[in-house]
Image 1 (cartoon, rainbow, N blue to C red):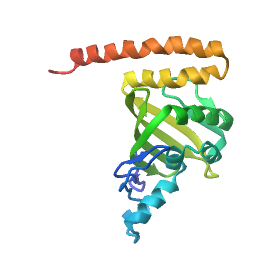
Image 2: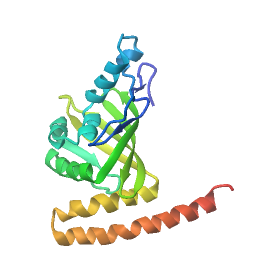
Image 3: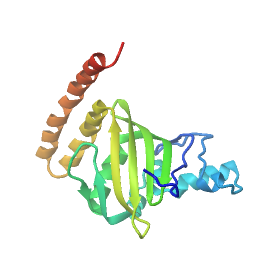
Image 4: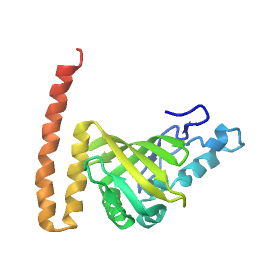
Length: 206
């Protein structure tokens, strides 16, 4: 909950499509400075906000070195699939290298900012599906990203994410580990897809 003196600002409307090959034409976002009454042209709005946050820039350019530089040395990444977080810049950089390769177009639909936190809501092509998710980022006192918390919906697409990201990440620890993770994750998509269909029919009113 926010107190009366706190503010939560929506700074990403409408969506931007971010991919390594292209950017969507004509899209723009409205920064806090414009909402507060600052004079600013629409073209500079797009440029300023897209380049302002390293998360947007990272998914637009897939520049792994630049993204790694934005992370704190002790950054903590909370995965949507694992209870235990990933810790440290080196591990995070390895993980994002796989994510940048595996994800197709990423469309950031909304951006919320409050104090030292930023939340990005997105849609992305991965495998043969389009999944939805959100990243909550927190900054430390040095302006580096100290925490990333990733959420994905619905349940079946968490399995999609795990099946695409898990095996190549595990394979970096050894070929056998990669094969084992692949065997564990592949059935999840089918099982959860059936569960989603059945549960929808059982729970929702028709």
